[in-house]
Amino acid sequence: MDNSFWIETTNKTNYPKLEKDIDVDICIVGGGLVSAITAYLLSNSGLNICILEKDRVCMGVSANTTAKITSQHGLFYNYLENNFNTDFAKQYLESNEDAISLIKNIVEKENIDCDFEMQDAYVFTTSKQEATKIHDEVETVKKLGLNAEYLTKIPLPIKNVLAAIKFPNQAQFHVRKYALSLFDIIYKKGIQIFENSQVTDIKHNSDSYSIYTDKNVVKSKFLVMATHYPIKNFPGFYFLKMYQSKSYAIAVDTKEDLFPGMYINSWDPVISFRTVPYNNSRLLIVVGSDHKTGATDIKIEDRFKNLENYVRNIYPNMEVKYKWSTEDCISLDKVPYIGEFSNLYKNMYIATGFKKWGMTSSHVAGKIISDKILGKEPKYAEIYKATRLEPIKNIKEFGNMLKESTYSLVINKTKPALNSLDDITNGNGGIINYNNEKIGVYKDDSGKIFAVKPICKHLGCELSWNNLEKTWDCPCHGSRYDYTGKIITEPTKENLDRIDI
Image (tube, rainbow, N blue to C red; front, side, top):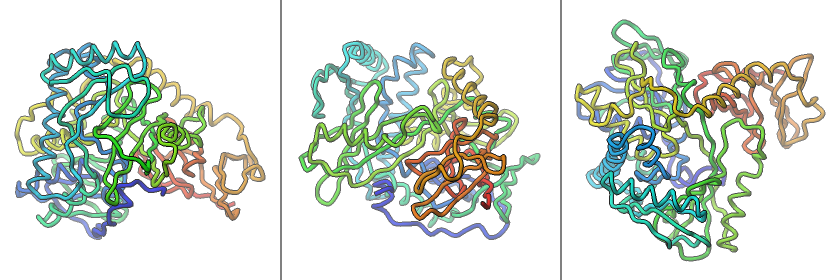
């Protein structure tokens, strides 16, 4: 129930752990979709390649997505044209359409059984103001070369829909079946995959990189950081250029026939819909309830409940089969960072900031990075340039990031703890004052105490307790730890300090 549909309906992997020092041509850090597709596109190059994953491959963000394969990233193209230019918006659209074709071609070429289906994609609204925006978006997208349609009726059974934009010939699939097939293909081609091999440090040498795990070192000419959020802070400074957002998902049996297509509404609260084959029928996957990671001004406990109530208004007899959450990196200008990590670090590449649209963005990234490593000139590299230094377009969000970081780095640490140990009831957690020190405490259902120092190991922000998922979350940059202090999500590279009470 608490794992994603994609994880629960696929097998566990069992690749070896790195047990010795090795030299390779290319080291890819991270075992998600970017890693899989980049290695796949390089698998016939004759280069010696390894992949390092801290846990098991495709168990992170890639395994907790909606798995829509689409160039329709909300009402986005009017924004791109207005904030960049028409050619920029056209290249963004074409790069994502190319990614759809790439996925389709790989599925067909490799005969991958991953429930791949062509579907139309829709953004809809019940608001008159948003209807005008949808009309403008349709006109922009048509100008960019895609035959988008303006509609006032859609197959999704939502009341009072006033307008929608339809993108034809998009797709969806079972993301983990696809990714695990890619890992199996590249492994058989000789690419080394190491699981349970957490990277603890990266050092730049004159003409290579040393990538450290807990006991061993990988030396590599090329380094690809495919860790969702960069685990190296400097000199890229990506922690100043991105924030992380959490979303929640449920897969439900509606007890009714379901609709064709993929859907998302245009404004808050943003809710996404798609269906998936399941036991000779179909489940409905609904995603939403977004908030910034580590937020303390919301009732996190209501996130799943809000989704369930929303769906129950449409399908009263529905039954929740799976539920999960995920995290997404969002850049300040809303465009992913793909390419060179820094102008100071030659042959080091990054892919991050996919803004909740990782299925196509991961393939755009894999193509750009693999082309660069092979000495080719990638077609769309300039618009995704990770080292871009244009003026910050989202001044408001940048101000919010600085405010939250300052608050958590400085102010939170001087505020008194809100609880004593006796105030923490079984099944709950929080920050307490213990021997004049702030301690993060969780008590399980039997009353067993798990205590940690509640300071993020990334850059020192004070963590917040997430009682829905029993995790410690960082409001500054989105690192997450389980209640024992073990890393769940980057950019942190170290577990929390455990405290014995």
